[in-house]
Image (cartoon, rainbow, N blue to C red):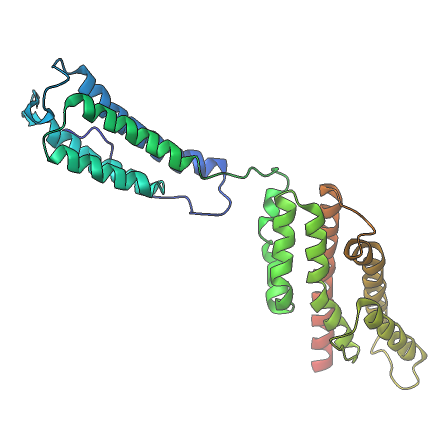
Length: 300
């Protein structure tokens, strides 16, 4: 059997999500070239046959060194390969269209001219379907933010699971050119760490507590422990950590959270959002390390 369509490659790219140019060219582009070449090869074969265009396709026999095959049989066989390629490229309508063409050829009453047109229509069907899928191109320096790196992912999974969604969304917004949305998600991602920090100071956080009220309670508790009357610090390093963390959270509130949530700052540039992403990532990692070591020290 003459196979004009190459054996279909295994489907490689995901149906949605970020796809690198390497993967697109290596996998999807190869499938696309195979598909279009397969259809065009059949068209060229038909057009090269010196026969009356009105002749029924079933009567055309291909002279081959090995065997003589009806053109209908060859075209139908290759349509099966074309159908698989269409499915691999998510061109489901075109795959169904290939089935229709195969059925028309099977009836053996299709003229050569009509058969050529049907294969051209098949190319048009593939073109229309592929035109409905778009690839978003990200700046190379920001594409790594689409997913959190392993270190911060471990911190979020271990300590701040309520922050996973917003921190991931912050990275995606940064990668896809939405820096202001990135900052807003970062502020939401800090809600759980703020509450965790307060609880480490034995402060209960209520549903109606705001950033400001929580940090005010923390400031009072820090002062009480500094005075050492009823509660004391376990060590000088513990005191330094909690004071530094409280100062960082207050700075985030004043410089980022309030201006972004109350639209005092209209928008953020990609560079500003990237800097805040990196700073908050570093802050959360440091918080996890300090609180983990503090818990281990208390346990021992």
